[in-house]
Length: 142
View: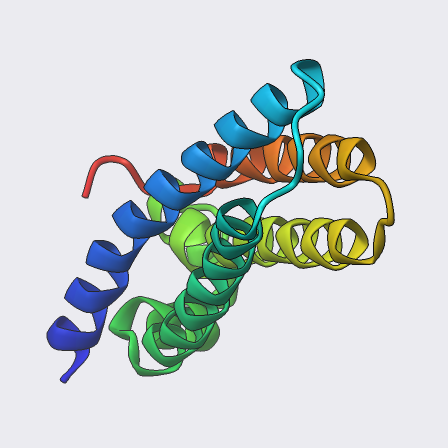
């Protein structure tokens, strides 16, 4: 079961990265070219946010059934000094939670903005910061 959920979690990350990069691209383009915020732009914002929340649920599921987390919790004093274990059991989950929170806040703020330019600007800034956090938190060696 662990391997199936972990694989699903790993596959969904690529959809999120594509969605996040696309949404950031259209946000900067809309911001700098003073475009109208269309339903396609809103769909990209919404879909990216939904995917990140699905990924959060998958990540929580992986976290609680992972043998790495189990080892980390039962051998904390030793495990915290092992870089790979600490990264997967502590740093990855914390940074991803921050990234998802930034996406959620940015999405909610953009949704509430009245002006199209403000929507694009809000999405561009919040989603860009989230992307940087997420890129640092992805375990790329997998």
